[in-house]
Image 1 (cartoon, rainbow, N blue to C red):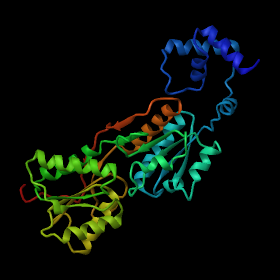
Image 2 (image 1 turned 60 degrees about the vertical axis):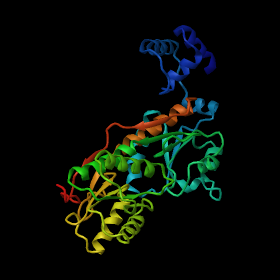
Image 3 (image 1 turned 135 degrees about the vertical axis):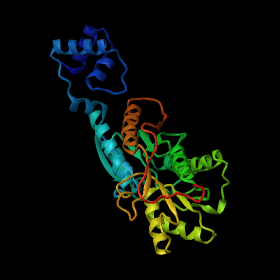
Image 4 (image 1 turned 30 degrees about the vertical axis):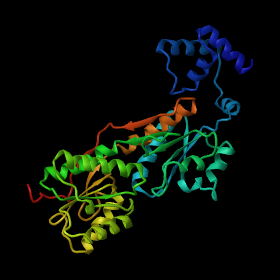
Length: 341
């Protein structure tokens, strides 16, 4: 008996639509039905002896059962946690994850476009490179391919998932204020980067809430790499005096700041306290170990996979803020009491 006929028979027996039967059998995570309805469908299917054929379904719907996560740097410790979250959540939706580089979207590369055109992936999760601006991604994505941006706030044309970056920046700054620091600088990311803007807003909010004036010369916006961190510290040295504490918006840049401070013979934390956003293994292996704000990076990846699955099944575009667990400081060895303690 043809599969469609068997689906129709099961739908009639369960008193639901053919679509509901198909989505129950495929364990569609976006389907919202009562548990007794789901049980009634499964009972009807069992009584009719219908076995759901995943391969046939994939051929009919032209689905591959795979999604791709594209990140700028596969060796980045931050993206390793994101990848783990995507992979586990994708597996729960019966999808496999391919890992690639964001440059696959470049016009002169087009690997992502070929993967989509050949039907080898059903959707994309994309982390923009820091130097890219939001509107550019729309022209880079293959047409009609479901996609979700991660670490981006409120994209107009695409679904996006981000952590509460503003709160992360605020928490880092508030921690230093509570230690008695008032002269606090910020080593931020590129101005066009969504996360960098949000973390700077959090930094400014914490200072304003404490009634502390912000010195413009103590803010840099040079990027998230170790090299950018070194360059940022050098720029701060050009406008003495140096602040007594620095919030660094990214742990990779913080490693560069720490190395540059050591080269300039600044004692950390005795002369300079440093708190960074992102608690990865790097933070625990610098000398001294970096005090860091832990953010829900794994949960970000998992929610990105769930959001993409909803979009692939016809769900509306949406922005998801991952705020659980909330940002929290992990104290290590790069902070000390400030002059106003």
